[in-house]
Image (cartoon, rainbow, N blue to C red; front, side, top):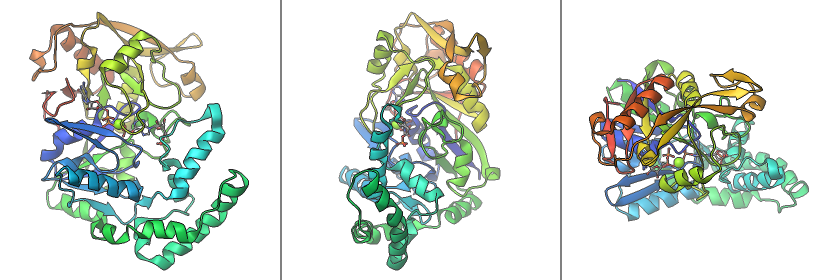
Amino acid sequence: MPAHVLLGAQWGDEGKGKATDLMGDQVDFVVKYNGGNNAGHTIVVGEEKYALHLLPAGILTPTCTPVIANGVVIDLSVLFHEIYTLTSRGVDTSRLLVSANAHVITGYHTTFDKVTERYLGKAKIGTTGRGIGPAYADKISRVGVRVQDLFDEKILRQKLEAALEQKNQILIKVFNRKAMTVDAVAEELLEYADRLHPMVRDTSLLLSQALDEGKTVLLEGGQATLLDVDHGTYPFVTSSNPTAGGACTGSGIPPTRIDKVIAVVKAYTTRVGSGPFPTELTDAMGDRLRDVGAEFGTTTGRPRRCGWYDAVIARYAKRLNGVTDFVLTKLDVLTGLERIPVCVGYRVAGELHTEMPMTQTDFHHAQPVYEELAGWQEDITGAKSLEDLPKNAQAYVAALEEMSGAPFSAIGVGPGRDQIVAVRPLA
Ligand code: GDP
Ligand code: IMO
Ligand code: MG
């Protein structure tokens, strides 16, 4: 059986959690392949609302095995806090599996994240402050700590000694902070070792065997295409690869086993943190989208920047990820508008761009070129099929689909699990 990838097409918070949850009972494994607790996925099941950060959305589906794969960076205190919170609400978390190769976020990573942002001042990235960048930096610099190191104290201490020798110099001399001791950090990590041990697997092998046995695997991306460290709006990005290629390296599943790439895209655009955003609305319309769409960060509570749909970005996401299906979310948020502008290109220094400009300088200066579509007034939150949508909403969806370059296979019309227009099967 093949594996599917589900990822974000824009700057995150497209509704990936809800889309994954929707597919939960059609898949056997949901695998988080990148990022860490910088992610925030809100999932509404009946009257219950769950905010997940580190755990894959599949944790809410009893028949599904959630996996935290090698590409993720894990803050163990957050992992166990999230497990505790869900367990106390009656969710069975006992199926969770964790890769031995995943890296761990330690106290010095979160400290470095916060002080680096402070030092950047006005040029700050606006990170979530969860230690994500510094943990990935250590991974690439080969001074990271992996889950498997927690089960060999001698090795763990050796690694911490090597890492802290340099970091303490920076903490003291550059950041004017106290040094951290190997004992303190080791103790903090080892506290979790016994509880973590039963969950730890060679998840790449396990997933490969599962696929051989005919099981279905869904690879769930955190963050999104434009936050990708290689293909996003660098440096205003996260430190991992949320794009489809990252699903392979982040899980150990080869590209030849993937048959579908589902991209979740919002009917408008949002962004948290700093960086360019051509269709951003800083006026009352931006406030309206934020209020109606409840656009406040699940992780940091920050108000999200809001703007119109950008078809250049959707096409870019289609091309980079090889998108086979889009899930369009939050169409209901646009109800009540007379006209809805959609960005079809950018003007940069008088020149029209219909693809992402090659340089960040050009993207910073990109002026959106809009095409206006007619709005609708009818409530669509109960729609179950395309025919249930008002004519103008159908036309809006059809126009976006045409501009974005891949079929819109499902359309979100509200936060609830059942508030979805299913156009064609996703799994
Ligand atoms: P994620 O990070 O991509 O999983 O997205 P978030 O959970 O951070 O943000 C998406 C928000 O939109 C959540 O609060 C969802 O409950 C909500 N949501 C998802 N789909 C829809 C939809 O179709 N309509 C509305 N109104 N809300 C939605
Ligand atoms: P989900 O999975 C939206 C943003 C941060 C910041 C930048 C770098 O919920 O879509 P980091 O802490 O990762 O080093 O911050 O990336 N960011 C997100 N924005 N949704 C997310 O996740 C995000 N994860 C990180 O706001 O601009
Ligand atoms: Mg989110």
